[in-house]
Every structure is written in structure tokens, then in C-alpha cells.
Amino acid sequence: MAQAAQAPVVEEIKNCPACKKPLKKARRFYRNGAYYCNNNCFKKVQAEAKAEAAEAAQAAETAKAAAAKEAKAVAGPSEEQASVLMPDTHRSSQP
Ligand SMILES: [Zn+2]
Image (cartoon, rainbow, N blue to C red):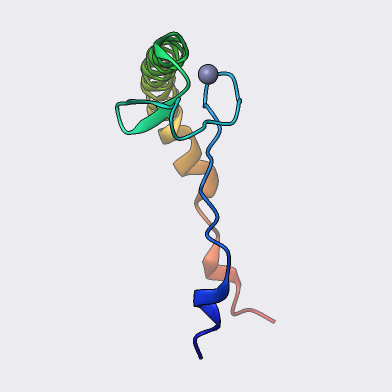
């Protein structure tokens, strides 16, 4: 079937990731693998990405510190827990 040939050619119009305005072919501004309407919008997205990356790095560091703290807390009372968890299996066979 050659029906696809009859379909109208729709030009793909993407929206600017910064200001969400539709990008027309002649006006789009290509930077770093994405289209923007101008350099200003590109910089805006770059700044946001940078802030996000910094935030993610900070969150990772916080998680790391929290994990270390937790590991310490778990290592402390482990001996106590072992004695509590010891089961009295010897009386299970008695009626
Ligand atoms: Zn824009």
C-alpha cells in the first residue's frame, strides 16, 4: 500500500525547552543537542541543568553521610539482637 505517500508532510515543530514556545525551522537555535529559540533560552536551560547537577551532587553526598551513619548504628546493637533472635528450637518436637 502506498497510502503513506499521500499523507501530508508535517514539519516537526518542537518547543523551546526554556520558554516552551514553538520553534520554527528558520528561527531555531541549535545548541548541545537541543533546539532553543535563542541563545538566552539556551543559557537559561544550561543554568537550570547546572543547578540541578549541583543539587544532585549534594543529595548524593547527604545520602552517603546518612548511609555511613546508619551503618554505624546497625553495627552497634548487633550483639544484643543476636541474643534476642536465638530461638529455643529444642522444645519444638515435644507434644
Ligand atoms: Zn525559548
